[in-house]
Length: 343
Image (cartoon, rainbow, N blue to C red):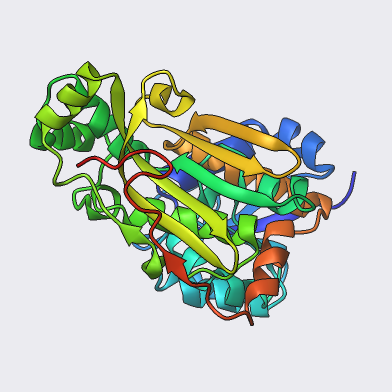
């Protein structure tokens, strides 16, 4: 077997902890899949005092400079300081695996020019959509992307349709760990807009600025609207959608009325689903857990195995090719396409 593939981990929260457990408890299975052991060499956390960890705790700026590492896994999220650490690691010749959707959506093309960048976990957790668009469907033409990309809001909408008001549904999601104390990224649709920007760049081969995607969240919905919709044969879902329209792209995120016999209507709780309309492959629907530490860690581990095997970072290379493109013009899809917007 080849020499171990050594990694440094930035962040030991829920996802980082799940990843560390997989690397240790499933070490033999991981090594078999990767063709070599994947060794967790060192970890950086924000507050190391008194903290126990499954590997050496070192400062983040020192971790990204450790000479014997092969890759850095970034799981701290946000733009800064994650951007600084990722730039430093890539410029040092390390591969980077990240779940950071905000950073990939905003800076992915420029970062990918610096070195091998992998980000399967940045969209829809365990659903293997990133490399599917970049590699499996590389020779196809993607016409449209439609998805439920935020498990938190999907859970809240389910609860409201069952009779809960918005405040109670949100509070329950926070108690269950699905929603943050500040839920704005989810309920104001910033999170699914960032994910849609990543999917759009991979599917349409165009550079997208996520702030140009119109976002309508779920704060303004009344529980009575969801109950009335159900009585009329519809389910309300927060839909992220994009389509190619010649030189431009139409895209937005907003609550829409989904016929209750449509596949997306049956996506419940924290699940995510993505429908890809391709010119030759046809319509593909991928569905699975869109939240949770184990699901996200599964996608990170898939990228680590690709890296350890020497598989090219296809999605990263695709984003790098877009870095010098002008930003695509984005216009909203409108109120009737792909499904009617909630009035």
